[in-house]
Length: 457
Image (cartoon, rainbow, N blue to C red; front, side):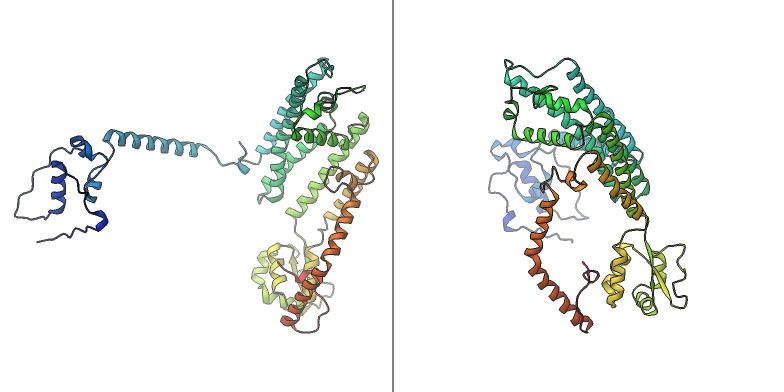
């Protein structure tokens, strides 16, 4: 006869309370169950009733662990309602997740490279609406409030103006910041191209915003209370604004004046066109770094053997794909190996090459500019000087860029760097001496110094 052992730990002993008839019958059925072929099957138990339906003092209690499996503390209708709500919620979540398409950077409707241009056009349309609203407030004959106007009304209007200007900045920057990040880091050329087109369009639009007289006049009239003829007597508006509003007002005024809002219309347009050309050169410089690869030859049998020892030719052929892979070196009799500035290949060679001269050569080739970027860099330096010095009146491009930065001027930057060099010189020499000793220990010989290519992260 089959037997069943019922384990009853001490922590699961039945509660010493009077049981109902149904509960006692359930316990007896669980503890005395022993199947037998000779005995007839027991009759079906009566319909189950909860313990608290017979004895109110047992509400919220159960008899044994078996009772926990047989009975629930919640009525059946409540359990059904909970189960129904849970299933309904799961269906809604699954349907909404299936209906949502994944978007780049979690921007709405940015699921394809062509969406960048559409988002840029939408941002421009929204900003143009705000610009028209600010321009209408100027054309309606609105002037700085007289001294009899309540100060509270003047402060509220200044806040509304700052909110409108901040909304323009927020709408444009939401798209252009994502485009700048995408064109720099995305792996797909289609995404980078779409982001670059949107970045160029919005950069041109930002130039027109910085040269918009209506935006500047709205800021000066409703925040700084300056009319076209000069400042007004009431100067308590800025003091009545919160500190964050005051900082924003001064920052926007400096940005407008830094970009030449005080110039004539013709010179402003010339400055805007020059700035667009600068943005185009900057984009071309970045695209060359992202999309183009520099190839160079390493000449010498020892160098070729060293590289082949680290990277087999079969692997090197997959990493360096160049049409002129087997081109002739300066000396046709000397073997050469063509390498690229691929980060994986460069870091591997710098970490495992034994020859100091070869490490230095690889480091210099990988950290010098692409040949395609040399004319771009020359044109960029010239146009930046023309835009900052000749058109906007700054001593140099560095002076213009640092006007609203913490450093303030190139002289302060130079002084900061000199002080940091003076403070770090002793620590630098000590650490370089440690690296030099490690180099002598590993490679042997009396080396005089350590090159930058030998310090690998």
